[in-house]
Length: 85
Image (cartoon, rainbow, N blue to C red):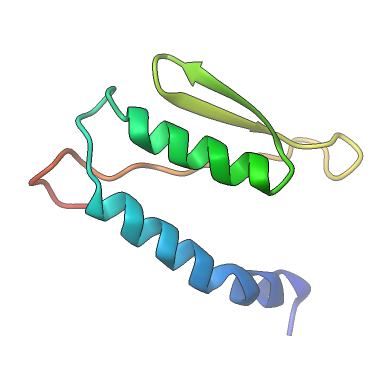
């Protein structure tokens, strides 16, 4: 089994729990203030350097250049309350 698949399997329960939490606490587009706080606290607890407040509620997680050039991570928040996610 490839190392990245093992790593994904290791974090799958946590990622599912995070997704469920975010979907249970929807916020209007561009007003995801609680989502921003949630993500920032989790990323900082994992030891990442984080910048928040990008375009109101955006979050950037920085990667060490030594770890991987061009490292990026993306998380898309679901639609506003009542919409599909």
